[in-house]
Image 1 (spheres, rainbow, N blue to C red):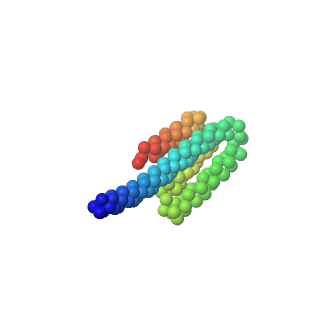
Image 2 (image 1 turned 90 degrees about the vertical axis):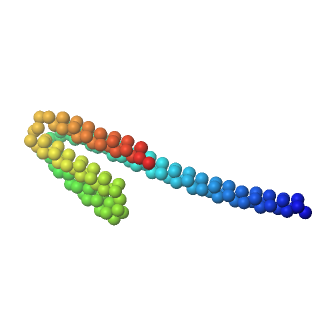
Image 3 (image 1 turned 120 degrees about the vertical axis):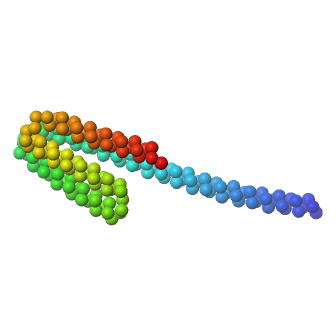
Length: 159
């Protein structure tokens, strides 16, 4: 009889241990999903910033190429179109950031505004026949590139 009681107690302990192990397994799976979600979010954030940085470098390269190949009157009109487009994009991003209360869209709006200011400065320098416009272009590309590299590094190492 004592043996039977002991075996029942052992099975109860085993069942308790099995339930405990199952709950631990579930917790581990939840944590893995959470970590993978955070990792994916970090990767997409880094990738989107990298794509934007590449876009800005290509944008300034195209502006520089356009100053050489396109007549001045047409180019000044194109600059105005670019600036209006960048202003509209900035306003849309600001509205989205307010509605969603998102800091990410707000930073994108500020970056778009900086791009618009740089384009406006570029247009003014071009209209004044500034002799070192290539230097200004290089400074803009370098500034935006350094900004995005620092931003990407910070996002990559932030926990």
